[in-house]
Image (cartoon, rainbow over all chains, first blue to last red; front, side, top):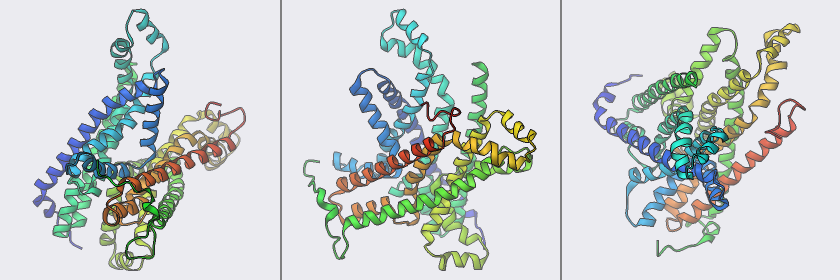
Length: 219
Length: 249
């Protein structure tokens, strides 16, 4: 049993490219997911019945089916709808943004609901419109209350991006698996990938925990 | 999209070159999905309860060992963990054991997936159990000890019965997650529901992916809904009168 971790060093450039893709997918899905998730949360809490219903259906649908299935959905659907072969890498951006929005919605909803009724009423009493009230009173506080939850979800999202491997995208795992097959080095490659994910996710979750403690003190 | 030939009857058609029908493939897939998820769930419940309990015991060594366990299984993506169990473990074990795993172990994909998913989920279950235990007032434990219970007895008869009731709602979502996560087992070749879907839409009936994917999605929705109802039933049945309200009722 010999381990040849030089194999990892030799393919570092390729792995780095895959890793960069994982990061950019995470960043895009987080930004879009929070944006769209916030709008969804506002819709879920809205007094307009149809809007409320549509947002609930969206969230419950995506929270009930496996991410892997959604990845296949978009991988097949996007070329069918647009007629363009966009490839696994590009369709994954759309998949993760739309899928994660459902999860971010639930977090933002909890955040908005954590704001006391008095604050909302005070905003209206000042003459704010609904939009102004959201923009200046509710959302800034709601957002701050759920920052740790949003960051935790981002760490989960970062780990979930490894699933794009199944449609052949070259993320960190995809790159490692291609090298593993080429050089017949599955042990070195998969152990390295596991360590990279472990170190990053562990470190980030520790930082989130510290941030959480800090925010709790301020409040 | 204009020239998409809709054919919802596709699942009742015969697979070219075989005596089987597509719906039979989907049913087989559903069977493997349920089997993988349930086996993993049992393992996760047992290990997760044990580890979650250990995280709260006074013994520093045991508690930090349990913390390491949770952090390890929580911070590596499931698909990577399955690859480690399936491709790496047989190579790093002693020769004979590794050989057995590769050659003689029955249903290697299924067993690896069930155990891998079970260990992955056990870390999440452990976190929920720990949260449940921490949510109890320390007076409960002390009352148990004051009655002359040993620490294990206090856990067995006082703390855990209450803690498990508290964590039923978060456990519901973990139980639903285990079904969803079982789809990842396709990466090591378990022929579960999503695997069958990929096979049908990929090679056999590439003309009708939307119908097949819709049907499979509906099956997952039904699974999630059933789990949700089952857990709600358990929550009502195990309710302690006048103590923990059954979901705000």
